[in-house]
Length: 379
Image 1 (cartoon, one colour):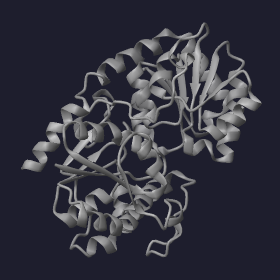
Image 2 (cartoon, helix red, strand yellow; image 1 turned 90 degrees about the vertical axis):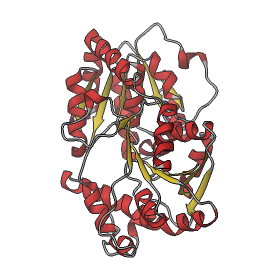
Image 3 (cartoon, helix red, strand yellow; image 1 turned 180 degrees about the vertical axis):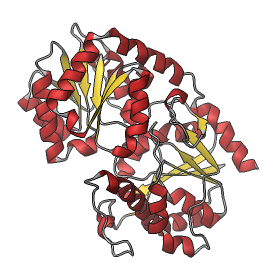
Image 4 (cartoon, helix red, strand yellow; image 1 turned 30 degrees about the vertical axis):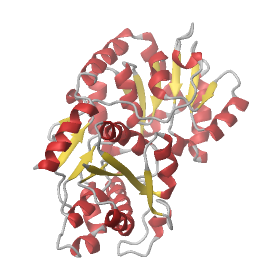
């Protein structure tokens, strides 16, 4: 069987999410290729998978200004703009990718196409080729409404093959623990989260607990590079150093160098989170895949959320009792300081985090899910 994976988005996290299933398929003897914009190919190479750059003339940012019927795509500064932004941006990525994907499949013909949550190119290509397409969740968050805007963005491409909307996936693979599935959410077959992160040589402090409580802070490599996000991060570190805790900031090399110069008492750098998070008493982050790393490790978490669409899932996380969620302005350095202090002083958060880890780690592994994909192709 030949399986074509499509990585969309700007962040390497989308690649990391697909890597375990792609690796499981390859280990089962199947052929795989991961297609993406050229900017994501280093991340694909970094996790040991074979990339093909199907878009080289544009980046995921530059396409926002293309001359298409919907016009420019602007960042959502208010809640009502979130779903149009997500749907149109990822829909446009699919439109721009289509020519390169079709060229690839003329010489490497897949039996199956697999895309992440909003990798709409998987549905579009599957319809073109008449083969099954699979949606694999990038993370545990559930929100609906973006596909409507993807259909609007992709109207010319869909009309060309006689469709007015993207077809539903033939199979949906979900990484969300069942207890955190919002009411009415689209059900899928469950799959255990297995880390697919890029690696580096480990140092003992990365996998050993210290004498003091440890707090990890990570905003993600892509977001940390933004000046306003970096300034917020520095403000948070300044506040957290008042706690009797060791602070570790997981960040890209450029940001880490600046942080170490400003906060010599703070460890910072690219750290494989699946090791580090197990040594932490809490982790501060902005949601998505990092939350799954924390869940799998049984580590309480503080989520700094900027998006209204994520709130149904995040409310369930708070109700489960393994984390605190700070929405928008509540995620100030002072608010985050107080949330970390609450978690460090109350054992119930750690207990509930361990309970959630037991649930998540009991789900079928990517190796188990390979059989579902094989059956899909045979039918």
